[in-house]
Image (cartoon, rainbow, N blue to C red; front, side, top):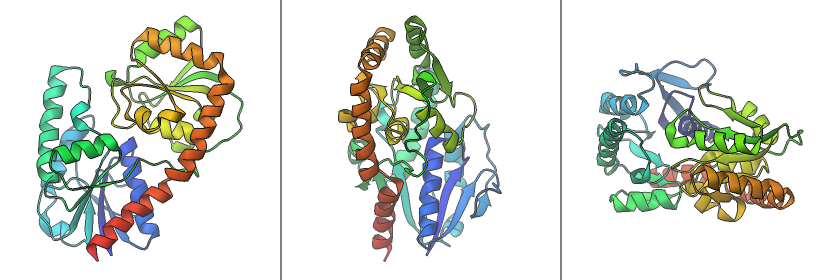
Length: 319
């Protein structure tokens, strides 16, 4: 069986999860070709390179451009294709949706217009897909509302990388995420300054390897994700897989999906500050909650378990 899996750039959460999907497919004997914006010599795959048309920061427009550019005759070579593709093909078309795209918080009018343009185009061609995985309840509601055929799946985490490392806690609070207003970092920064806590922020401007990221999760007392919205928030899974307590805003989808194992707050500075004080003031309870989450994640949300389900769904429907 042959598969074409679109990756683009290997420096974002969605792209890394799609790459893990490709690795699992390859492990199961599927011949995988990756679609890339630039050849990566570190990846042990056949790669087809497509030159991006827009600057790298306009990732959504580049993906939309590639969705139109990749021809039917190219896609027809494969048994299934995974990614955004507009053109019709004999190959079985598969995609994964991480959350409710209608809920995404976009700060500026210009950005909202661009986002809505990309979203509408994506919704239109996803209706012609053979299989779309919804990775949580928000994603399933969104797909069903749009009339898109879907199958329930889940977000996942590599439990071989993210695990308990028994390192010394050298940081009070850790923030993981890009430098974007939707992440609400400034409110967290002000809260930590007023509480006189050491805050470390990573991934804001530069990509960081997952092995290094695992070190940071184990070296902090508390991970905080104060975003105005997250389609899921894999930071939550990675924190719990490391048995590190995590605080999310109520707007983070993972907070609702994993409520017994995480703390939640509002997005304003005072709410964040109050909840951090409460968690660190009863840290024994916080560690117990995180350890319960650790066991739940390892049992139910490992990449091996979720990807086995997705590949099984694809293979059974093609056969």
